[in-house]
Length: 254
Image 1 (cartoon, helix red, strand yellow):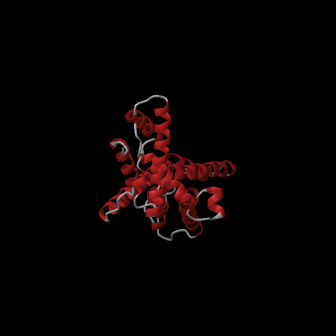
Image 2 (cartoon, helix red, strand yellow):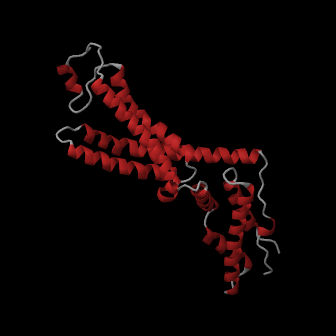
Image 3 (tube, helix red, strand yellow):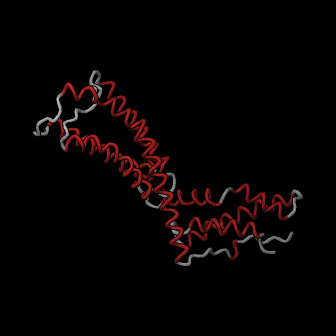
C-alpha cells in the first residue's frame, strides 16, 4: 500500500522548500532520507500496536515541520558547499556576516577619520552656543557640510543595507549570524570606549550599535533571506520542478 496522503503531502512540501537551493539529485536524496526516517519510525510505532495511519502521523510529527527540516538541509548544504578552512572554523554564514558588517564598520571609521583630519572649509551657519542647545556633547557638531551628513546619515542607513546583503548571501539563519557578529562588534566597541574615557565617541558608537544596528541589521537580514527563499521557490515552481518521490514514498502493508 502506498504511503498515506499525509506523508505524501509532507514530502511534497519538503521538496518544494528545497527547490531552488539544492541540485535535483541532492534534493531527491534528502527527500528519500526524510521518507526513510518516517518509514522507520512508523514501523517502530506499528510494532508497538499502533494503527498504520496513527503511526505515520506520529512519525511525521516527530520528524518536524517540512520548512524546519528543509532549512536544516539547506544550512548543511550551504555550510559544506565550499571546503574552506575559514568556513569550517567560523562557519560560512558567520564569515559572510563578518565580511559585510566589518566592511560597513570600516567605512564608517574611515569617514570619521576623514572628517577629523580633513575638516570642511565651509563657514558655520549656526553658532556653537546655539548648536549645543540641541546637539550636546558628545554628539557631532552640526556644521551642515556634506561631511556632517555622511557621518550622521551613514550609521542610520548602513545596517539596513548590510543586513539586506547578508540576507541575500545567507539562505538560512541570516538574522542569527548578523546578531552574533554584531554582539562581538558591540563588545569590542564598549571595550574601546572604556579605554578612551573621558572621550565618549566610542561609547556613543557602542550604544548606537546596541540599540540600532543590532535590531535593524537582524531584521533586515531576516526579511531579505525570507524574500529570497520565496523568490527561489516561485522560480522553481515556474520552471516545473517536481519532487522525485517514487520509491522514497513509504510502502507498508498494515
